[in-house]
Figure (cartoon, rainbow, N blue to C red):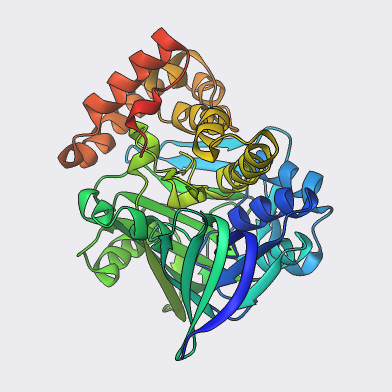
Length: 406
């Protein structure tokens, strides 16, 4: 039997950082908001937890000082170190100093509770219909179907967004997907600096390979196209780190993984929704180049909330408001993948160019060669021409064209 849960100004799907930032803006504006979370909180979240300086500032400014329980050990990260097949390594400190190492299970819970939003846990979004006056949302609580009526729906439910699927049913089939998996291993010997997040530009290891310390264990992570085998990729990475960096680890005690797509942010192909349904965070396609999606999730989530508030007060279409406001976050995120911005500007929060200049001319050329060879691993996705085309449009127009957004 269906149960009607009531009417709300806004319904958010998800209880992540994007949802928390979105909820905070609207609750502070006096709107009646509910967030649906399919799990029971606090819930596990697959994530490195290394937050950018911009994300750190957002949390402090909007939610206050971070409690100790929302952090892993080590509690902070000084920066990022890039490693290359030539065995050249480039450490880069974050601008503004070390940033938090978030324990997403508890940081997300702290943020969503601090937002003041009403939370319905154990409630899975299943679909929506627009009757011309309100949005009718269906969801599952255990084996029971429940219904909500709301003026706006915001999908802040991650890369595999069910809200996005409800309005763009074929979208997931049109884009490449990557599996991101990490294993946790106790340390026998590890010369890698605990103060840094380590990333390898090595095409033979995977599309995305990283390692860092967490709670007296070492994380070995790897990204690869969906269909690949995590154990095979992981064994390759573990052997490489042992042979080349002297990293000796005990057998994996635990592992986790999830599917991701970071293509939209490279080629300015975001998904922001239609009508009174807004998509934000990673569901919309935001993902920073330095392997961090939390800061753009927070900021895009806040913009989605601000757009709803402004649309209500000005009696204007929310998509019109949202797309105007979100252009700044698109510019900031896609700039990180823009080769012209990388060469002539500094779109990241760690200064790669300054660190590169510290090397000899010969070493600089070797690093550039290694990066070019690494990027060839992405050739099958045919992103190169699209990235260049969008980069030229950025020069000509000063922004990225919204015509590519859904």
